Structures are given as structure tokens and as C-alpha cells.
Length: 313
Image (cartoon, rainbow, N blue to C red; front, side):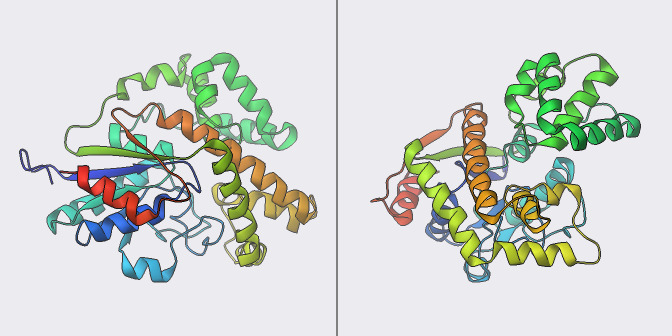
């Protein structure tokens, strides 16, 4: 809590996928005397998508309360706007109980939306979206990403080539307004004033990070990622386009439906996850005043948490 203005104080733990954020956050929650974790992850919101999202286990969630995990069905779509709405409610609840708030996750768009506010833009245009999705199915998302980069280089750099939903939205906004979405979003470059944010970043040597990503992907497969995806595909309501395109699940769906061998699917997950981590690093550099901590395998999550805790108000 910010004692000067009674604003909710939020400690944000940044870091690329598989860097060890969750383990550090849970140790920090204990060090802070019962802190709770606000997940900032666009896929952990989905129920039963557990292995592929590296969701905290039931035991971990029992030990440290988590918010915004398992809030929607895999058949539903989920937006940054809905995330902010639910996150604000969770923050108000934690603040009212004087609970230390730790925001943890790697979905940069959701974190930016929570910290700086949302750019809504013009309403969706069904005809434009239908055309773009049909093109993506025929020609691939990379074609649309190239089109976006041509009209809005800044958005093209920021948006991952596999993030079809945001690519479509950015092209849609440009067609409807004649302006790049990156230009329209510039007004949202300042932190909101009703929360007091402290940003802590965790980083590793890129080679070590790549090794950890590869090991995590192999572990997910051993834990049953293929079987989990098969169960999700057989649910009556099915998977939303958003859930179906999630990193890891998309490649396993291609395996299940006969477009890839399992070996190739696993290799593609590794490559795509490493590319995603590189994209996250670019995003995180934009957040102001991040205190970065360099991690090594010899440093335990508890030691890192103690170091962070010592510097927090």
C-alpha cells in the first residue's frame, strides 16, 4: 500500500518465459507475509489448459493464493479489456484486505493495459476481420504481419508474427482510421496514477534462457501436453480460435491433426518459444524504472526473493 495516498501498491515481477518468475514470486509472497499473486498471463485464464501454460500446480495455488487463473472456458475468447476489468476487481479485493500484491507474468499487452490503460480504437469491423482471417488461413499469419509492418513498422516490430489476433486488429484500425495503431496508442505511454507500481525484472544469460526453454518444453511433453490437448479438442464446445493458437497447443494440434510429426511439433514449440522470449525482452525494455536482477543457476528463488524484499517499501 502507498501510505501517502492510500493507493494500492503493486510489485510487478517481469521476465521472459521460463526464467523462473513464478518460483521467485511465491517465495516473495511468503517473505512479504502472505502476499497474493495476480497472474498476468493471457493463457492461464483458461480452465484445463494447465500443462502448456505452465500453470501453478494445485499445491502451489493452495500455498499462495493466485488471481485470474482458471476464469474462463477454453471455448471463450478473452480480451485485454476483460483482463483489466477482472484485475482491477482483484486488486481492490487484495487492497481492502491489506494484502501485498504481486503481479507476475509475461503477457506484455495485458501488463501494459493494466499499468497504462487501454486503447479501445474504432469498433470491430466484421467484414475486414473475416477477410483477414481467411487470408491468414490461405497464406499464413506471416503474410499479414508483413502487410502490417509495411503500413506500421513500429507495430510490426512490437507484435509477434504469430500473434494473429493483434495483427488483425492493427491492420483493421489502420484501414478504418488511416492511421497506424502505434501512433494512436502513444497517448497511453504513462503509468496510471491510481496505482503505485514497483517493477522488478528477472533476467538470465540468453543461452541459459534458451536451455531452460528447451527443457521446459520437453518436460511439458513428458507431463502429458499431447493428452491434455487431445482432451481439450474433444470437449463439446471446442477451443476458441484464441486458445487454439496458444503457443505449444497450436503445434500439438498440428500433430494431432496429422500436419506435423511429434518430433517436428516439439521442435517448433522450442523455436517459437525462444522467439517469444526475444519478443518479451523487447517489450519489457519499454517499462519505466525496472530494477533488473541477473539470475544464475546457483542462486535459489528464495535468495532472489529476499534480495527483492529487502529493497521494497
